[in-house]
Image (cartoon, rainbow, N blue to C red; front, side, top):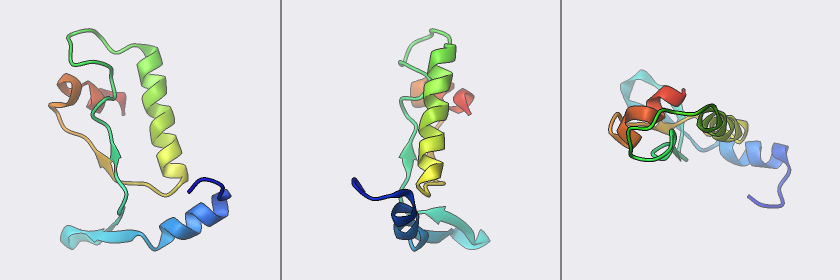
Length: 84
């Protein structure tokens, strides 16, 4: 989507929604993988820089129409979930 303005990107993404299971929740076909949110797979605490980095990634995804996020409690020892 390089070289496209925001309206062109949003127009491209508008068709790319699908119902999520039987609840008919509109979910983008593109998914943001959040496995690396929160840092490494270690016992170190989450820093404010890591939180800010995760928030920027989520905000950028939402701006282009992505509303489907891959989170799991095993990713970075569940630190990715704490970013949200």
